[in-house]
Length: 266
Ligand code: ZN
Image (tube, rainbow, N blue to C red; front, side):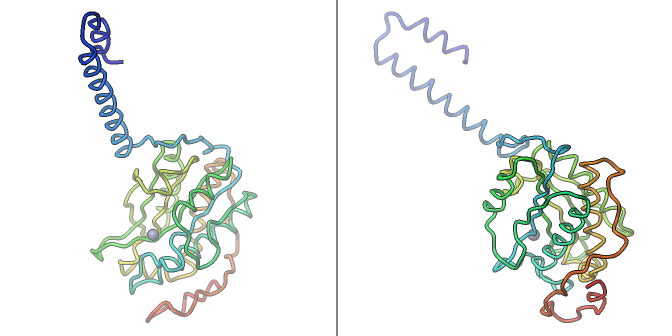
């Protein structure tokens, strides 16, 4: 309680009711302003307003969130397929690899459907011992921008975010755009560790070309899965599968110049 509240209380004797009401309303107003300031500060910075349970070392389930879907294409540039298609492809590859490592998985979507952000968070928050990994590809106005970015909100998610980012950076010629705190809704509202991975820029020629290649997407999934398993079991926990995951080919609507190599791993 602020110091002046005590003074007002002590000075109450002999004062009019009007004076008392005036002081009370001032107090309430200053309390309200303080509350508003705290709320605003909470929005602008971590730590999160949601109580985050630290399951980062104990989780048994991984909620895998393929970004966008349905009417929401995500990033769509001529160098790559629509973001929603390859995000789902990488997510499915991660799913299979985590199964191989005996982790339970929950997909927020398994097909080309639109899922609102709040529903994605609900799917995670329904679990009681999970981490949430959202998979996206990036877009920028400047085509020269390339590389990986990983985002988190709550401090409990930082280690997983750093692990995924540094694992992705073991891919030859990859560019590091850093690990950042962000206020994205799927991160901010998650009650367990949650990260969002941007697997390269579809607005960049080389990132976009790689994203079209199934072998490359397999490698992305391998790195993400490896980081998740290491987060849970330590560095000895993960063995990369000897053969690539077999997935259905991408739909034939990826625009001109779809590399034949896209079909190699499928
Ligand atoms: Zn996205």
